[in-house]
Length: 229
Ligand code: CA
Image (cartoon, rainbow, N blue to C red; front, side, top):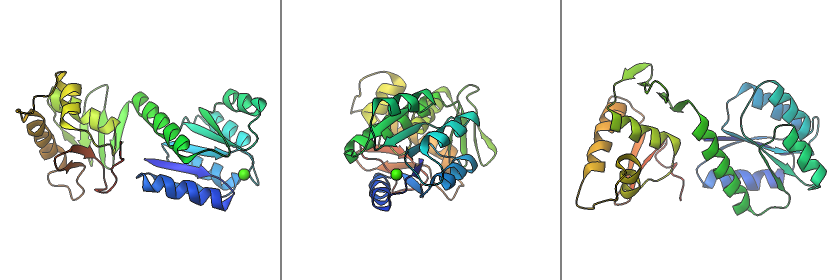
C-alpha cells in the first residue's frame, strides 16, 4: 500500500511517515504543493494525505486539479484551520475525508485503514506486485502468464488481495470462503491455501502468500509487511 503525504512541516511529515512505515505502509513525502501535485499525477498511490496550507500551491488547488484530471485516489485533507467552511469546501471539491490538526496518530491510522479498505472494495482489477486478478472475468495472471483457478481458489485469492498485508486467521478464511464456523479438526484452509500458493508462487522469486505459524496467512510482496490487526 503506497501513500503520498504532501506536507511542508518537516517534523509533522517525519512523524506521520515513520508512524505509517512502522505499520507496514510505503510512504512518499512531498514537501510542497507543486511537487505533491506532480507526484500524484505521475505515480500511483492508494491514498493521498494532503495538507491545506502549503508553499507553491495549496491543498485545495491540488485537490481540484487532481479531480479534474480524473485521479480518483482517496484523499484525506489535513487542515490546521479546522473551520467548517474549510471542511465543506474540501469535501465539495472531492476530498474523501479530513483531519483537523493537531490529531492523534491513532485517529489518522484509523482513517487511513478505513479509506484503504473502502478503496480496495471498489477496485475491479486487484494487483499485488506482478499478480493481477480481474474480479469481473475472474481471470488471474502473474507476470503476464494466465493462471487457472477453481472457484474456491479464486474466492480465497480475492479475499487475500482485498486485505493486502493483513494477517487472516484460519477461522476467518473458513468463514469467508466456505461460510461455516471453523472446525479446528479440519485442515481444509491449509489445503486450499497450499493449492493456491502452488499456482501463484511456484517458479517466482518473490512469494506473495506467507504463513504466520499458528496464526494464519497474509499476502504481501514483502515478508515483513504484515499490518497488525
Ligand atoms: Ca502546512
